[in-house]
Length: 449
Image (cartoon, rainbow, N blue to C red; front, top):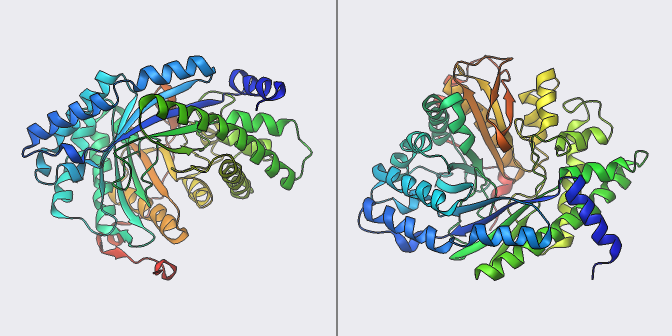
């Protein structure tokens, strides 16, 4: 039972501290809708998504009003499309257009799953599918795409890493300010139940249809810490754990009720601290609340490690269905504290890479000069994938080579995507290294049977 203090505290978290349900995401299997042609498959896919998710937005809006908790995004994820179009991969764009049309019909924010899983090798049909990604992203508004290039079990597919670097460059050049790249992410150890875009897809091990919810409360955590300025780090970690517990309970409440009303299974609560460009909703500012003068300075990685661990521990105590990514996101363009640190030159891609060793995902929403070679982008991806592979964690890269932009410029994406200061990359060539291809072997500790 909730007591009066709990109710008042939750109201304050919503009204003053930016607590929200960041996304309610319905995962839908498209496997039953594969037909003998691309045209018939595209139409069947459209009908499948629209029929299953027809009440998603209405239900989420009703729950938001009834519980008084903002639900910011309503989204859909689908089976990796490379599997659905394996018989006609060159025509995969027809399914892309059908999915984007379905997203418009439903009134959802994004639809994820224009994806391929090539972590061990790239089949011929997957190679053909990968070639369609830039045009698919350029010709759609709400469709998101991802590629899994490595895993702790299989190693990193460096041929795919090279290819993805080229696809990112091509996508950037086909879209305004490279913004198509904001809808694309490359993974190592991709999660099948991730509700957050751009990397959400509906794994083949999932139920036919499922509801996953992502909660977010960076402002709540920062606010809680502000009342304990003299606490040592052990006490601060306990405070974060208790706060994460409350945030996760709110998310589970919404998730289970949404699943019940929609008549589908409840999947997971992803308790990631997902920031926004709004002041008071920043992971960077949590780290500064812990005592750092500015995020990016020495001590940042240690502070983030403590934050991420405490968030996970608090969330796992609150729900037995914690999944997805769950931790702390550090996107540059989507976090006002990160934006300001990057503008001051206080944080670099190298430091962000070090931070990803201990946080939830990876290098996220980072703008780089538009003339950055594809091989450099691939090398950045290879570094991040290696971190995920060796540490048995999900890592990712969502990077935007902004056409015509140089270091010091700013790219404005608007809304939750925010603005991104163009950050420098190392100029030493990685062309020969990336061109070697092959498999970056999995670590010895991956061999478990």
